[in-house]
Image 1 (cartoon, rainbow, N blue to C red):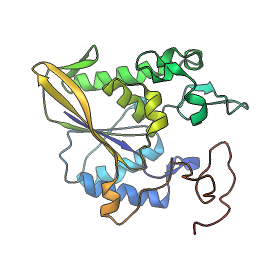
Image 2: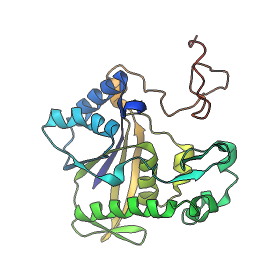
Image 3: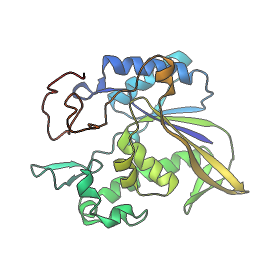
Image 4: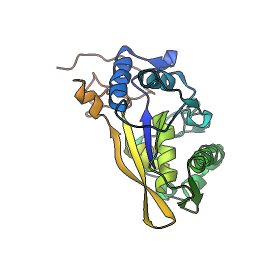
Length: 256
């Protein structure tokens, strides 16, 4: 089995849709996926993910099943040290803060850290991951411990249109690693495709392995650079790049 985990195109967050650039990204993504035999499509209920899937579904004459658990991992929020005014999503930390939590590096105990334990993150994480396992079992792979039993082994390709925060949750479960490491140390750019496949090295025991993360080859093929959305400044003095959601100052000069 192969999973294509697809992040939505460049977002227009206020309208929960896509920017003009995001629609172009979605069209190029459709060109890429048109040559792939996909057994089933699943999509987040949020508008930006639905919009990203639309060109592909229309091009292929297909439909997608909307899954609530594919929405962004943002319904549970936490107290974060850099944001005293209120609660924030649990997956966006300043680097100098999250590294001070040893449990965040532990694939099993990350969720026991007090900042997560007191906010109900475990319940939301288990809702998403158990829903993923139900879907995989429906497609022939049943979770057993940290691996999967191929009840009906197959080479089907499944496409999931979703968001970076929840994508990291899915990957953490499939690959048995802490989601905090994925949230903080990776970045799936808009419209990117992450490919995860099963490997059955011994009969009856399947494990998921990531072949590529955040691939944007369809954008380069269409003559586009990937969007900077979701990234932060490479250098602090790059005032034309995003600094931080907490500091919503306007970009003060054009890129030279």
